[in-house]
Length: 111
Image 1 (cartoon, rainbow, N blue to C red):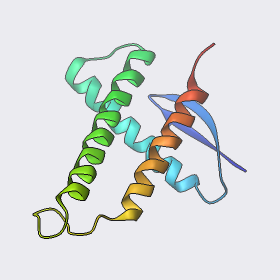
Image 2 (image 1 turned 30 degrees about the vertical axis):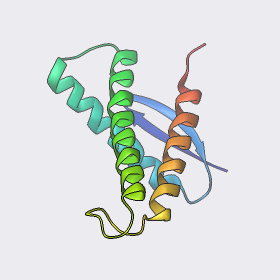
Image 3 (image 1 turned 45 degrees about the vertical axis):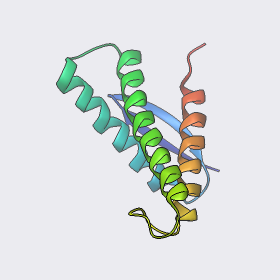
Image 4 (image 1 turned 180 degrees about the vertical axis):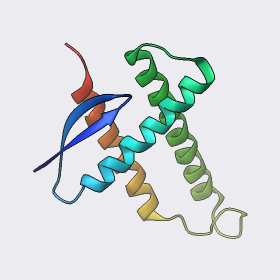
């Protein structure tokens, strides 16, 4: 099992991941940082926990929207404006992303 040190909002976090997933985890951390920067630009500086909560909510909103679109595309079926055949790889990837985000969030919880 590999470990990656990620810097999120100026703080270092050591996160375990499967071998070969380091770059993916770094990309996810970069996205979280991008979201935190957006929150900071819109609302000004805030506490660490609040920034992480706001970034998490923005990411969860995107995930929810994507899942909703996927469900609608599946329901629309062939001939609809949505793709005729849903992409099972996309559904699996979304589920993996959600599961990994939950694992990371569990690891960041403060006692």
